[in-house]
Amino acid sequence: MTDALHAGTVLLQGAIAATLVVGLRRRDPSVVANAIVSLVAALTPAIAEAVLWTTLEVDVTFDAVLSLWVAAAGFFHMLGMLGWYDTVWWWDHVTHTVSAALVAAVVYASIVTVESHTAGFRLSKGGLIGVTFLFTMAGGVFWELLEVVARDVSRRIGFEPVLKHYGKYDTPLDLVFDGVGALVVAAFDVRIFVPIFGQVPQFTKSLLVASVALVVGGSIVMAVFLGYTRDLAWSSG
Image (tube, rainbow, N blue to C red):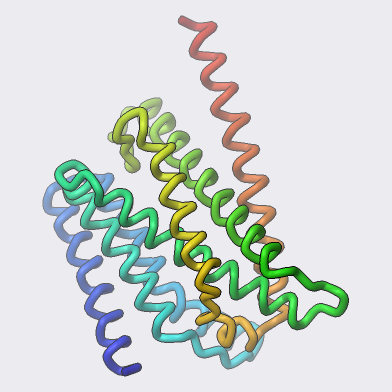
């Protein structure tokens, strides 16, 4: 079973690399940029294993399901970038649900790991679901703000936006399906990644804290930036 999962991961990574080639042939910077990010994300579990071993001498083995899930999320996104977001109306909902469920599963497992290795820190089942849901939604807001910032910056410097917007309902629906992915993971008590993070509980705690700081702090900075640039554009106009 594990060999099949690894083979699937490699196949999806190769497919993402193929979308990079397509983007280069089309001279489409949005496809190229997204393909590079998706490929790096798909390789992250393997990179993380190597980094943890070389820097901390910690031998961590990431579950094959995690690698496959990350690669699948990246490939689904790239299918959208190649045209499915425009031609298949529900494809954006699928990609957001899959990606948000992945984030939620990682967050859920991280919180369970920190809870089991921290004296005096216990969450009820409802509390665990609530924290996972809120963090996943905060990650969704962070992503939506990043999309807007990327579009604004691209327009200002005269480049095609690397992240596209698909109408006035795009952002609200993205967040709705982010929530669906998070609730599915929490409701079904998906703890598949707990053994991974249980190998490095202290690192997991530090990573969770850093992620919260990045998502919250980054969202605030981007919101302030967008407010400033919009006010500046309004006053200039």
